[in-house]
Length: 131
Image (cartoon, rainbow, N blue to C red; front, side):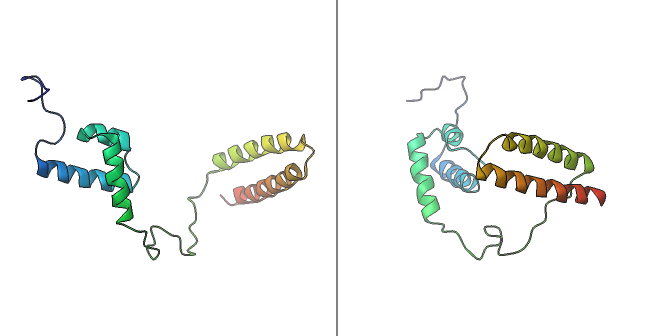
């Protein structure tokens, strides 16, 4: 017996094969962090706890390959995209606000943070000369 009305479209997969295919696609999307378990459970018309169980087993069956460059940096220095002068000025201004805040605190940790922020600002100001 169907709970849908005659004129209402059926939601989710209609056959076992479609369900298995949809579950595999969903598990891959979840594994790569592109989807949310709750949303996908609703889409598949599965209880969320059941999809969690399937996903946990999926993860167990696929251990992380430590030689995969996509998983680990492997010591390769990745450089961020260059910042514009406007972005540098914005970050410097934010750092100056944080320096002001930390300067008001009388703790060794705050003094260390002030030194780090000042050093970062100096480097960014020098980098701005070459942008």
